[in-house]
Image (cartoon, rainbow, N blue to C red; front, side, top):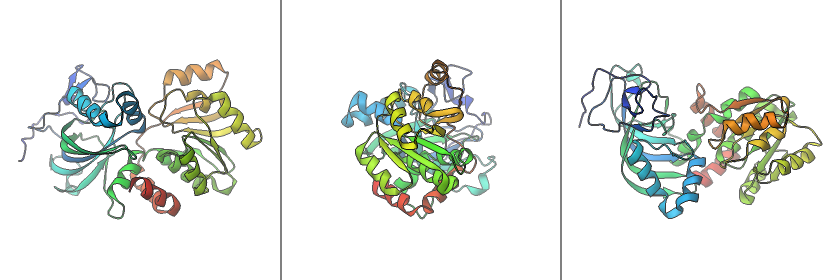
Length: 349
């Protein structure tokens, strides 16, 4: 049934914020997920899948257990009107089908009812209603759902590709901002460190670092999971793979310096899904080097005060989940890396 579209509405979605008034949707405690009417610029979706970010999914599993993770999502959405994890502050993204859109949208000519799209904006700011969860894919942190959501006029999205399985594409697009940032940072001859290198964002970062840095870049992957470390090694993207817990900063530094014969990293990429790994990234980065934190479990306070505390003059970059053309860049990277694509198909396809 077509919904009425009201004339009022803000491109950034402030019209959907219920608490506190005046906030933007992401930091808001509660948003309006009543879709009986739409607002100017909105895009209504029938939601088929949620891809929760790794940090949020791990936190919910640790707190509630595997069997109750779906209940945790339902409770959060019921309380907040969005999937905004109250502990990690993060969300994830979704896959849905276009149900209705405001014809005044600037992209209206390229939209069609029934078109499958993936949101490139966090669930932590996306008004969402879940009618029920029909399945949970624990390996990919994905939920099969029935529900609806709206994207605001300012929210980026990507048309789902025809040549990749839905779950695989959704998994890759969930971290689409990571690899394009690596392309901006890594240069030939750089020493590159990747924490959490065996996860999906870590693997894509390793593939992009190799592509951008070429054979002269020295890439070290740090991964706590034995199986993920083995799969990472088999890809041949890293010059060294260290099986180590990223929360052990001194241990990570010692192992890293042995692998690089004493060279600190020019660029460090933190893609972990746990808290308290900030200092590992900081300790292995050279002065005036760059530590890029893509992980949603990152604490700005721990980064800033931790770097100060150990006398590290490095550039601390916060990962922006959105980079211009990030969806196509990431999917193109997957298509150009047969071994990476095969691993993603095994894990997420």
